[in-house]
Length: 178
Figure 1: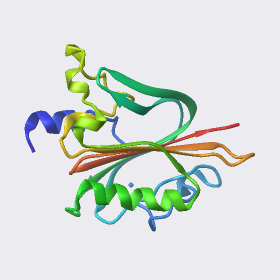
Figure 2 (figure 1 turned 135 degrees about the vertical axis):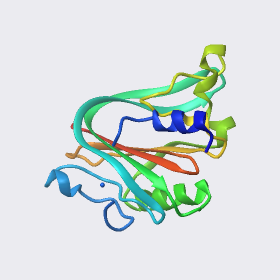
Figure 3 (figure 1 turned 90 degrees about the vertical axis):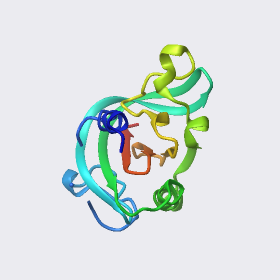
Figure 4 (figure 1 turned 120 degrees about the vertical axis):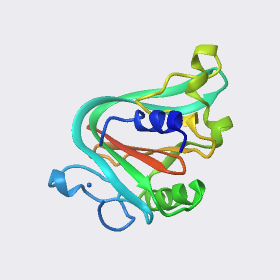
């Protein structure tokens, strides 16, 4: 990996251990509270921050020179994975997305490749945007991004954000109490 790319990817999220099958479940570290998205095959958890009260900015769309986002305040869990399986980024994203869909999540926005996801590195030229919540979508050509939401009456609304390139994936979960 080129040194500049490695630096930007390493700085995308603050430093963030892997759990069970590919279906999301309560986080064991949080007892009866919390929602987690387990790793998929070929994803090695390298950093994990659980249950911090935070304001989180989710990217919900991109057009040249314009980023759409929503801010939420709730319990934030952030996980960083090293991708070691050699699968295409689209296959890795599918492996994370499909279990979420089966659990009632709806995809609010998804993009593939730098052209559709945007590129924060050109922000100073007015063509991109600053990294949102530490995620720089367009840093690598083979990038995937997805944000999904699940609302169940009487339970926290759960937002899942996944951003990945060929070698690294970031999975963030923000739970907003009704």
